[in-house]
Length: 345
Image 1 (cartoon, rainbow, N blue to C red):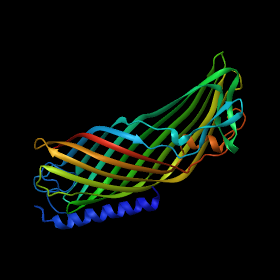
Image 2 (cartoon, helix red, strand yellow):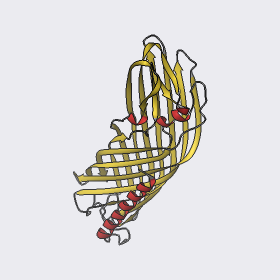
Image 3 (cartoon, helix red, strand yellow):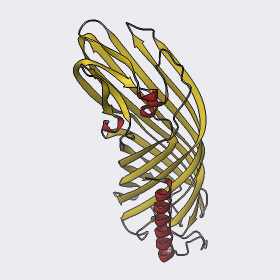
Image 4 (cartoon, helix red, strand yellow):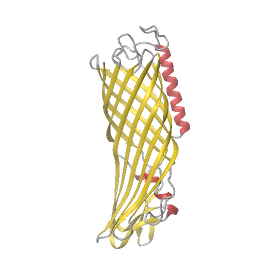
């Protein structure tokens, strides 16, 4: 999805929340008409602070996240009697749904403002492809040539492994307007990836190639969130939209470990501007006055970052050429489902 399409989605979502808030806005016990009252009732939702509204809200639970497939480009070459040809495209790599966790806390400062912190992480979103015995395999690099080809008198087998990790921490200040809150805050997002090609023949020869990237994003975000149901319902339906701009501190490594050629380990650092957009919907149900169960959907775009699958094609042979370029044009789209509890006090 392009940045233009993301902007359209965020705009439509924000207009829907504002329209809903306008329809349900009311005075609260503090006489603060601009804040609205009783958002989420005495024990539901994040926003607002009526006379009986809790001051502290804690959330936690499991996050099930899926990373989309990498962008299409030649990645692995196969050697046979007729030559060396592209064998595996990066878009052939699919990731499974992986389990992580999230936690959040919010403190109401007065009838109109609140402070929130939130953290989530999902590690080891992995994918693996096994290669059947052939004359040889290698990684396709700069210029479309193949490097690390292991082949000769013995059949060669291989395994391509792709590991991706995501972490996010944010702190936001919120202003309540009816059943809607506008937010602004600081966010840190980290995306770490490792792509490795492990080759071995039926004798003793082996060659392991690797490409890794580390993205550390630091920046600011703005957003809007709100409730789509009346505050006194046991069920609550909430939505959130956020977008931010970040300074991305990038490091990338490539190299190889082999028993028939020189080992290498190259590293390069870079900086660029990245962006993050997030959409979320959650449904909650009050089990008791202080405890609710929550389930929902999370969509996350991370743009202009360095992905491991984009690095081989822009660099040369790891044990001959140093890294002189980091491809920072990558985009990841995550789809997540979360389930957990909310405790209020």
